[in-house]
Amino acid sequence: MARFLAAVALCAQIVTSQPSIDGGRGDLPGMKQDMFDMHKKQQKAGKMKLGKEPPPCPKSDKMSAFTSMALLNGEIFVRLDASDGPCHKLISIGLNQSESPPANFSVLKNASLTCGPVGEWKKRVAEEMSMVFFQGGLEWVKSENETIQVITEQCVDEVCTNHTTITQINEAKYEELLQCWSRSCDCEQAKNPKMKIILFTIFALALGGLGFDSFKCAWASLKGSKPSKHVLSKKEHRMVEVNFAYSHICDICRKTGTCYSSAVTSDNYDMCKLCYKAAKKKARAAWKLWLEKHPEDEDAKKGAKKDDSDDDAKKEDSQSDAGDKKDAKKESEAESDDKPDTEAEKDDTPATTGDEKAKSDDKSEEDDKDDKDVASS
Image 1 (cartoon, rainbow, N blue to C red):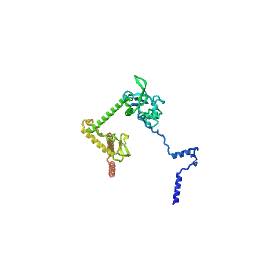
Image 2 (image 1 turned 180 degrees about the vertical axis):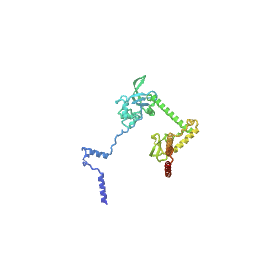
Image 3 (image 1 turned 90 degrees about the vertical axis):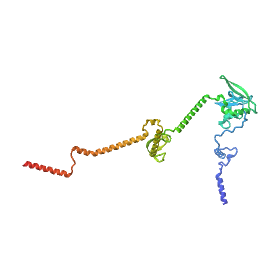
Image 4 (image 1 turned 180 degrees about the horizontal axis):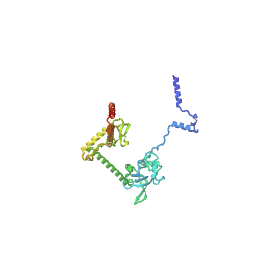
């Protein structure tokens, strides 16, 4: 038994092990590796992930040089010290007398894309400016309230000039910026009055449509809606007569074989003949009841007998035609039976039997003999 278990363990070890093709010489230092060695390494290391994500971003110092910021259409608009007033376009930002050049919008964006989720690069530019400078290889302040050089574009009477400002970097500005940058901090560049008018117009139209539908539904629930005199499907489309469909199932009684279907083929609603007649009877009763309760209705004023649907009228026409044909057929048969009598009357020859015909022949012979005797005498 022990020998059997040892043999089984040895076989399992041979099957699970992956013997080297070249005897392990490819693993020696200085030896060249071919495609088989690379495949073996991949099997040992596991499958490599495709589309590797950017590495996580380092932590920032939670300080900022701006109190307001708006990122719009590839440009940055900022306020340096005040929380209100006009926002100016940011041209560049960097330490004064620094070896590294100042950073503009393109440099800040590219540096923020080197780490973290790609879709959050604006958040990193606004909230983690120190990390963006570090990722871009730029110099940043070492402590709070140190100054940095900011170049902005200021326009007066449609004349724009660049202004250089030395401003402080601290945590108070960061806290103020953190509260409003996602809403563009009420910068006038982010305001779009035309789009606001369009949005308010759409909102007013939607509100008006909702109010009209709500009033219509409330009025219908209080007064009641006018029923249809035709049989309708679940989607309020009229049912029409079609050719008998053996494979279709009635949507009411679930029996195969239907004669009526919705006028709109997309409804996919069918009814058999019995269910249609029952539904038609109910619809007709509801229609008449509505006209009795609402004499002011136009149909009630007309007083026309148009309760039946078109398909019922067609049925009645077909039935009347069939009845006319039957009557005509009966009349033709009666005329064929009367023809021999009329012909007999025209010829004035009554019908006689065989005996009567023989007696008449004998009388005629006797009359001939009498005539001969009279002539001889």
